[in-house]
Image 1 (cartoon, helix red, strand yellow):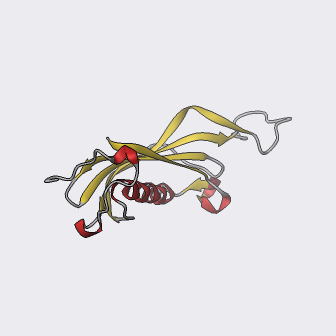
Image 2 (cartoon, helix red, strand yellow):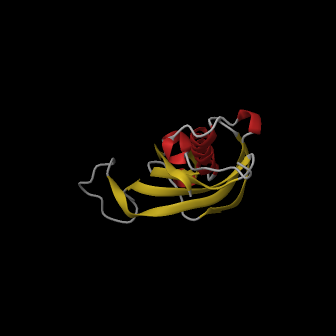
Length: 150
């Protein structure tokens, strides 16, 4: 891993519900990974970058309205102008499921932590910063990053 891991936290709101049962579209996870990747690029070379694409996207568990999510990302490899990043999406808290148990006396706002957190998605992404736009590490944990030929 190059530098530090970036983690974003977000609660899935009613506007994120896309399917029956308040299921959230997997594209919402991918959207958040884009923000994580952008932050990584600012730290590693001082530019917001261009996201080239993803490969190996896997959705491993459902995400629902009311879920609290963590979106993790880190740099695995630094090229001349490209960066290979790994991404994960973790559910860390969720609303109680009102269909599986007698919820008498439980408020409709009841929620619980996911212990352990639930892995909901993984991916590999490629980002690009042109040589002319690389300003060097902007955050101390990225000081040891090396481009080939540096």
